[in-house]
Image (tube, rainbow, N blue to C red; front, side):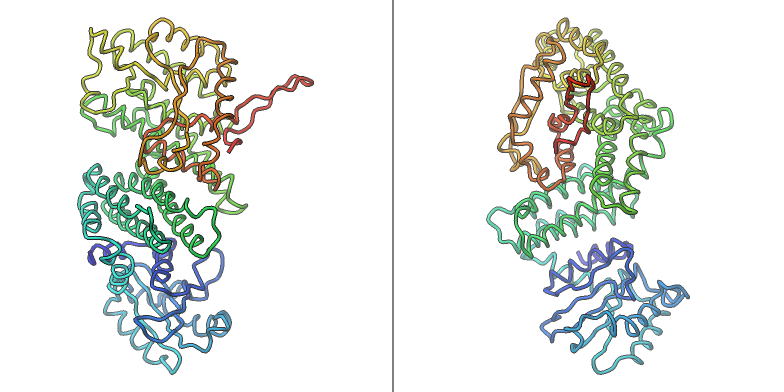
Length: 579
């Protein structure tokens, strides 16, 4: 385990990785962290400042300057402001006299060189000579290298009583099986489930658990990035964020030191997930969406089903990425982060339209639950008027292909989910089989709903005709949260939700919309979800995608049209206006 952790530490970058992990580790050790890394503010050599007792000794002030990976002769003093020696000089010349809190100035001060790797021999002579000359009565120096950090992480994050052997075993297995994403994900999912089981636990245990989840996720990410395979990491990061929120949701209505610490630990997990998602898209998806059949050919599947399943999965992931960027563009304060989110949000919507246009497999879903990925894409595209016009054309072509495939016994969308069953689908000439695998649908009523929203009359009539002539036996339905959703949505710990059926697509579209919107108004459970109350609504979409639940229609109530009788015009709000 120590070797695994040390390898992980050696792979971390300084900014937002090693410096993000260290404060949590110090807090877990009982230190009071009074200075954390901050963007835009001059650090004067100190990345992290803390006060506390180490190994039962006297209380001291620890000032950390952090450098990634190994410390070499070049990184010791290469003439740049980021070198180690200038940072150490700044701490003594400027930080201690001017920045150190007054209440700590009478304590012994320890300046710590923290690096994820080791101090190489050419640099060690320089380090030891430097510290020997400057050590005095109330000032000393310490080396916190990868070995020491790994020991501390094992002792305070992963010690036997907090991370049982079977959980540590799962982490090792997840790392060993990164080249088999499904197996690696299952092992990590077992680890996260064991750590996040919070029933009846104390606040300190919950805080420790969420920090452990964050550390384990970072270890998995570091190894996956090093191996160039982040498929299992992506799914694991999504799951870790959802389980992390399940713990955090307990504290959303509380105001205490523990509640703040839990929220900080969750935001660290969410930040890791966002980084994993961003790197996954940048490496595996975005460079290829503009190429005709670019992603389809990259799948290298054994049959058309592999391509279909993979592309709809990518569509859902890319849509979630765009919706998080949209959230950031709305929630971030004015500044560089907000501007960057706005730019990436626009690029993500363009990428989705190119993905669909260049990969015809996205015009014929293999499964009815691909409506989840379709809904995420439509929700994102609908947040910008420049992309709204793309939706009706896409859905019209998709509906025509679905109906044609159904009529000629081709690979029409079905309710099957197991891969081996999908491989054998469809069984031609078996009327009972065709009725059984299309006995219910969320896909077609969602398409009808969007056709009604955008006044796509031809598309709406096509769904009506499909239902009346071919799918009389099919129960058109929608899904919505119920009183059990807050408990089970994020972790899929039990069944929940309610079904609205049958959906009357044979009625005029205005009546359909009225029934749907009235149902959304009369069910309060969506608004009561903790992710909504905390303005982290993309977590609900993440949970729906990850656990394969239909997107709640409440997300679309912002499209409700409000008629102005006097002016005769129509107002249309953003889709997340209702959140």
